[in-house]
Amino acid sequence: MPPDLHPAVLQAAVVLGLGLVSALLARTYRKPVFAWWTAAWTLYLLRLLAILAFVRTGAPVLLFWHQVLTGWSALALLGTALVFAERLVFRPWLLGVAAIPLAWAWVAMGQLDNVGLAAIPAAFFLAGATAHTGWVFLRYALATGSPGGGVLAGAYGLWALHHLDYPILRARGAWIPWGYYLDILLALAVGAGMLLLVADDLRRGIAALATVSRELAPGAARPRPALLDAILGQLLTLPSVRGAAYYRRDTGGALSCERGAGACEGWSGPFPDRVPFPFSATLRVPQGAGAAGALLIVGDARNPFAALDRRFLAALGEQIGTALDAATLQVGLAQRTRELERLQGLMVRQHEEERRRFARELHDESAQVLAAVKMELAVLHERLAPEDAVRLEDALALLSGGIRGIRAVARDLRPALLDDLGLVPALASLCADFRDRSGLDVVVAMPDPATLPKVSPEGELALFRALQEALANVARHADARSVRVRLVHAGDGLTLDVRDDGRGLAGSASPGTDGTAHVGLAGMRERVAALGGDVVVAGAEGGGAAVTVRLPLARPSA
Image (tube, rainbow, N blue to C red):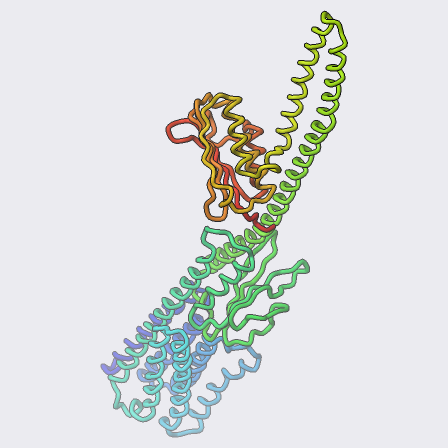
């Protein structure tokens, strides 16, 4: 082998390695651009082998195929650039373009006597294809800031200039062996740019993955529209992304735009057949039982998921679909919760209305009737003989006890104190009555009624019933010596705190939350929850139990 062909052999070995790298990338990432790169490197390698064989043998057919392979290498480079820019649309007439290098090689070898003259069009065609490829990557680098795109743009631009010297210097032997070494350096630069491009794609894809997943992290649940706005808004922060839209599959199976952001804001209707942007990416989003939506991203550079594995994208789509399903369920749950709260409030009001009616009937009818009977018996008592009057006195005493019992039941059913005195005096009176009946030491701390904000009738009744139930539980279960009752106005709510120094809680730290809960505490919770408040039952410091009732002054709107 002549010594000046050693650099050509080295160049062929380098191009072979780059072709294998491209093939590996094509197999790994399943992207058409790497398949076209593999074809370009393969054709370029065959071109080098053809010229090497021609130098060794001098066979004119090898020079013919060298010319053909030069044209095909240029076409493969053009295909690489068009595929990368997503502007290559297959047409049957494109197959005829592959015949142009064959026709020109036949003309150059059979009709032209000057080999240098024949090489000029081929060199310019190869240089033009290389320059166009460099221009495509330069636009990509400017749009995304991709280092890989910048390296490829520079390498292809310099290589295009280098191709132009072939008919002027290389054919005359002036560039041997330095022209080969320059080709090798430029080929290695293209290989480095390819690998950097893959790294860039992976970085951008992972950034896009993290950007979308950030809005899907566990935390406070959000309604579906807010979640979609957050996801689409995050996508707009990615480089070169101009807009994003989510398409939801309806009952008929068609996709229709549910939400858009950026350049896609205001979009409506079905999924577009053609997107009016140079680049787009579509992510399948499964939802529900087999139904699937689609997340569309449009921009000025190829999609940010270019190098991501399909399994990652499928997992991301499932994650988004799960989050959207959860948001939909949350909306339904919130509606059901509001409906249950409304029904619970209605039941409480009906319950109180029944208690009020029973109290009125007991007080106005039963108690009055018994009082009238007592008066008649008292008149009769005065007319009876002393020996008969003694027996009637026992009946009058029993009747008086019954009247007192009826009035006590009526008072418990509907606390007239609330209507007559107001919240604070009614609570204080309830504590005083409990002190007299139980004999316990009751310490009461209440705010000045003049400083207390207006409380709804339902709220006053809820606090009264809560204190009534808490004191009743102390008397029944606590075995306590003293009770502290405190009403506090803080912020936009009232807090009622009842603490005893008794035996404390047995079993559950929060009675009223399980199947063995006290019915009274459960009723207290329901009554307070219907008004947007909550009840906490826990052990008190130093022993005993504490019941804390928090009630907002303004009930949340349903």
